[in-house]
Image (cartoon, rainbow, N blue to C red; front, side, top):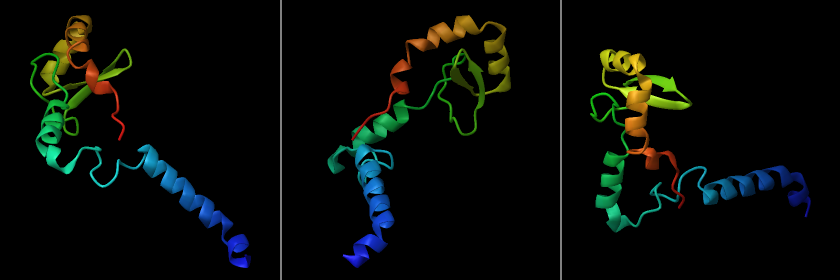
Length: 111
């Protein structure tokens, strides 16, 4: 009983971490996506499809290296500065064209 009273903070901390992991805050199990191990083809396809597209050229963009701009609360990624400048010249034209096409990528999947 003395051990319990001395270490109650660590116990509460450990329970909190376990709850976060179960909720999905630190990944969904060992796979991170909650898919079965035999579902790697679907997982790879989802990863490929989840890359944003340049609204001007339509090309897939790596968000880590892309040029981006924030417009009406949404980040748009571009393959080049020229495409970003084209977008900024008439953003409504390109923002409307892409809003329906990839809007399903803005939600998170649970476990």
